Length: 59
Length: 286
Image 1 (cartoon, rainbow over the protein chains, first blue to last red):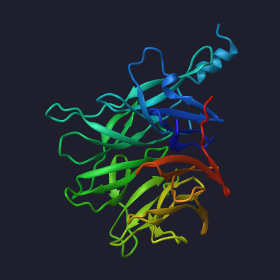
Image 2: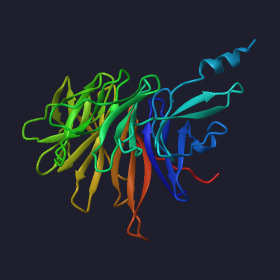
Image 3: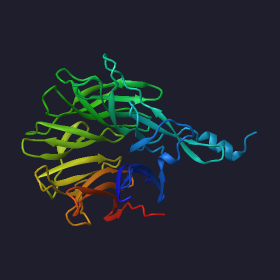
Image 4: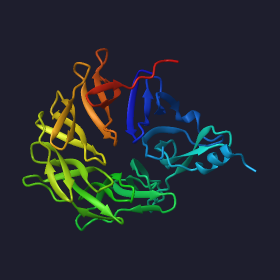
């Protein structure tokens, strides 16, 4: 993953965006820990996340 | 009986979350954070339902903003050849398109306050002069422009209704703010063009300034705070700086577009900046 396209930051400093390089990987970055959002969806969801655009103060 | 920690988890069960673009004909959604009984955090997807074209074609759209009141704002296109229309959507309120003043057919919404005030830009069919708007209760009104400016875009709004964006003249873009509805341009040290991209609840404004759109594009970021300007320079030679948002702690989120010497393209990197310190966002392999 060679690139990082951040999109939004909320008031507690949590950031969302996508990592790029070997595909597009939407992420959430909180307290220095990256979470790939497609890894933490509800089991059985039919959706795949392409891009995280914005995050509010509720996280 | 649930244990105390399970009660904590249940109380935080539905918290709001980031707006996402999804693979499907309905390409926007809200990601709601759920906390399971074992306190692991997972997310559910709530798709944004858009109106369909009378021909039956699916709409497409882009979400730009998410408010604390769960309002998602953006624009959508219903029919082939139609222009974009600003919308607001919330899980409990559903979808609504902005009502525009006479003479405007197209609009794009880019930010929303906690109480649902929406900002963006609007324009007439085949006339690409952007006019900034503020929409309250779903009805957009045209924002005033400073003298000599002919167009603009209110990109961001804080919870006091103060707005930031840009005003456009024949030759350049200028970072603009609207305080109590009155427009003003920001005095910045680098030009000739500039754009404000966000305003926080302390009235600090972030944006970029430099040469645009004539190539080679070059830019620096800025934070404008009551007349004081901090310049955000790229740590990488030749990279352009674009700021995105500033939060209430004064942390700026931005991007660098770095020319790729091995191809004609660019690599995008991201950073945070606070009180003069720029930190690259870097995920190294685990």
